Image (cartoon, rainbow, N blue to C red; front, side, top):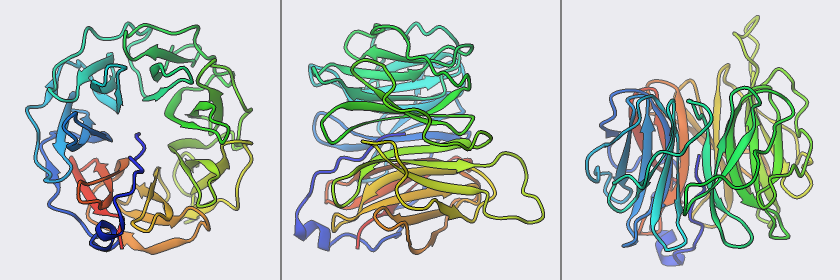
Length: 356
């Protein structure tokens, strides 16, 4: 999962944005299996793009303005693609990072061509990957690491080499969610979510933990993770948590959205109960007026928009996917329209307005 470009496009552009939840264009089709990951980036010429990864072992690039595929599918992975992220090398080259059942690959976002050889990970499957920058400006990749120790590895995005020793996850459960952000004092961080419901904050410069476990739900699964800011500037992490197994006696909800202060690790407000008995993806974005929102997607194929400041639902659920939503990203089109991108088990990608 990848954060949006938060730059304002001006009041005129914002006024023209389609209403919140309006589908933009037709569903993007081309993947032949479940779309597991989506991210947003920009090519060197300024073209905003969607990057997607799927169980068909391919990565695809789409024009965010037109919805058209840019070039052919990127092939090279020998297993299902689990996650994608975008970033920039120090020389300005925009990059795609993809993680899959056979490790991590880097691609030039302008051309779609591979950048060097696959990274030499210590295990086959890499479930989560993200990008960020350390305080000295070094662009990095963060990935979940060894299958036995459940650690996290940091790589130099310029060279593809490991930086330091792995950050060891003490809870001995697989890390499946990774995002990067910054605290109020400028400290770059990464946040992990694991299969035992644990969310934890780490220093991106040192790889050292900055918090203990933020959640005490030892049997929950962290199915979604995002970072953002509230209107007052407070940096936050947002997690989508579920209880494993089928619902009992018709009990709902079994899914929650939780908001954490990224500076202190403390919860903000009450957990948001989601009426879904299965997984819940989350992402953070901004509407045309600058107000921050959470967007969640569930196994019913619906998206919901929530006010990040109050935790209240905004409008009705957005419907269109016919199978579970398993990937979300936010971004902005060239005309200034803020959007959320959803990818699903129905093999399609959809774009929705976060405007008006």
